[in-house]
Image (cartoon, rainbow, N blue to C red; front, side, top):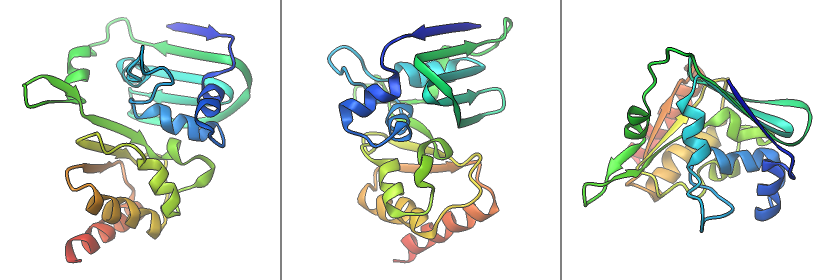
Amino acid sequence: EISVRDYGIGIFQHIADVEGLADDFASLLRLQSGTYTTDPQNHTGQGIFFSSRAVDHFSIGSGELAWLVDNVVGDSTVTRISPVGGTVVKWSLAGRSARSLTALFEYFSREDDRGIPQFAVTCISVSVAAGAAGYATRSAARELLADKQQFEVIILDFSNVENIGQSFADEVFRVYQAQHPTVTIDPIHMNEQVAFLVNQARGARFEG
């Protein structure tokens, strides 16, 4: 187990200040897809993305928000916490873990025209990304997928999402797909209600 504490302004507040974002949820949405950094000259933005998936359990807390990733059961969630000054990051990994960093990088990579592996697959937890905005509106869907067109595959994880709005589903699976035909959107962990609306939106795309 490893715990790291930084006593600065806090990661979510820092992102919000740089980007002019409304709240910590919006900052976490930028952070979790793996390409965002406030210092692109020196960082790729991929560190937290891969670190959060390389261990059994990962958490990052700042302000009144914590992002929790459980790779043992394949779950990711966000929770309110008692105020934390700065940023606290925690990892845990079983001593006899069979996790492979090579397999992790291969899963999220695709070879470019030169045969060189590139970071081309991202995974977004919809329950984490939505925050206070919920999953009902087109604007929430657009915010979810903003600046993600550089990926070949976008995995949308619907764990802990009970339902979504018809407009949200239509914006993601019909409108966005029509605008970005080279991007594959792969929804996972959907319950029956979510799957119905996703399939309905996809059906409208194919019919129209």
